[in-house]
Amino acid sequence: MRLYPLLFLLLLIAAVLAVLVGSGDLTNPELRDTFLKLRGYRLVAAFLAGAALAVGGVVVQGLFRNPLASPSVLGTTAGASFGGQVALLAYGLAGASSSFIVPEMIVPIGCFIGALGALAVLLLFLRITQDLLALLLTGFVLSALFLSLSAFVTSVAQETWELGRAVVSFSLGSVSGTGPRQLAFALPLIGIALVASWFWGRSLDLLLSGEEEAQAMGANVGAARWWSAIWVSVLVAGAVSVGGNVGFVGLVVPHMLRPFAGTKHQRLIPAAALAGGIFLVACDVVARLIPSRSEIPLGVVTGLIGAPLFLLLLIRLRRERAYA
Image (cartoon, rainbow, N blue to C red; front, side):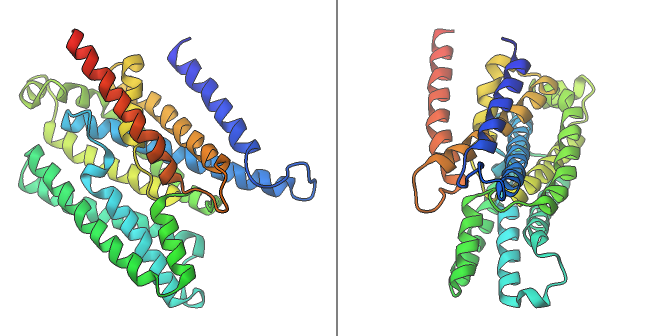
């Protein structure tokens, strides 16, 4: 079966399972519409977050010419997560009555501001130097800084049980509380960034051959780096705003697809969007199936599935190179 028909079939199966699986009885006519609506929001949120993270992984790996890179290497994932935690903390300490923002939009706006802050630092360094290693180190330092600040926010939030639980739950990843306002906020961000990433696919193809070769073939290397960092940051901000901190999607999905979709980015990016959405929807279904008094966080499930899967992909890659 060809790649795209297979992906659409898997998406259909994952969507059906996402609607049918979960706590609550769909045979109850009084609650059926509510359950279906909530599961529909959850399905769309998981698909959007997975698509954004997978495409972000493809773009980052093309930018750094490194298949081990993930969207988190730019620091914007940690920045978006920190922004969402700060927003939760500020809202909880200030109280709902003093907020001038719709409560459902507190976290998405905080994530977007946090990602923009990390992006601003990255773009500043890109103006100073075009060295990819410097950009990578900057992203690493930003990630470490924001993770430390997130730990501080989590500690402060423990003063209140409800607030501490909300901050920890967000940091572990979840799409269970996503509603129509969050989706309306994230959808245009992710949609525009997906299309823009696809348009930069040819430049990323040229960068795979090296910077000097890419420039000789007409690629604007500086603009490609600049805009790649921008669109990855937007994708990450949209993903974190609806799904929290979810790992391994941007690392595993591109690896899984390259043997089937090839390395050309304008073919790989749409496939990654579909596969990433399917992967995260499936992980969300698994999170509901695990027997537990409380639902297992989505980020935990993606880590439990993604880490062994990534190791298997690396072993297979090493074997293929050994026999080549």
